[in-house]
Image 1 (cartoon, rainbow, N blue to C red):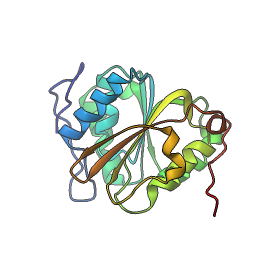
Image 2 (cartoon, one colour; image 1 turned 120 degrees about the horizontal axis):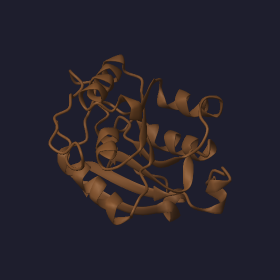
Image 3 (cartoon, rainbow, N blue to C red; image 1 turned 135 degrees about the vertical axis):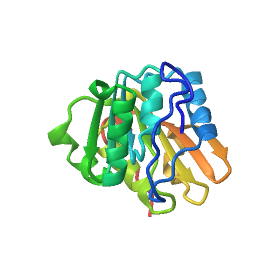
Image 4 (cartoon, rainbow, N blue to C red; image 1 turned 60 degrees about the vertical axis):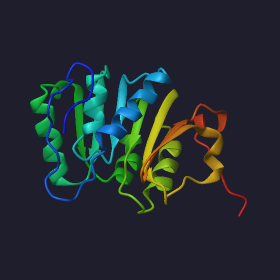
Length: 198
């Protein structure tokens, strides 16, 4: 796996050994970051949830992010993130957290101040994590007012229609969907979660 662009362009990074992680392909990463550039997204304070090898977070660092927080529950993946941070000599720009994403988000009030300019969420496909993670990000007010959330998910796992107004773009590559969301809306900024009429 290689960094696609920026100051680390062409640098090889480690993948997680075995079949426990599904890395974002080079094509999908290029599509993702090209879209972020077209949206003129601020990447200064980035959060990489379900980080795997950390490829999205390290790509963001390569392209100008000032600091990235990586959250991952797999010990094997965490070891890979540490190795990649060492390899790229960017440990001072990284915080690496070994926790389940849900636990990290729920405990955020105690552990973290400030909000994130850019959040990546790349959960395991078709496991029900997308809606759960989205609600926690809103509830815990994790995204900056002008921030962008990017969720990578399968075509089978659609985002509930109640969030339609907050979707900026969707990009599709095979079975992979990249959903770009802006939560810059009164209710979302205040932490109100949209409700269905059920």
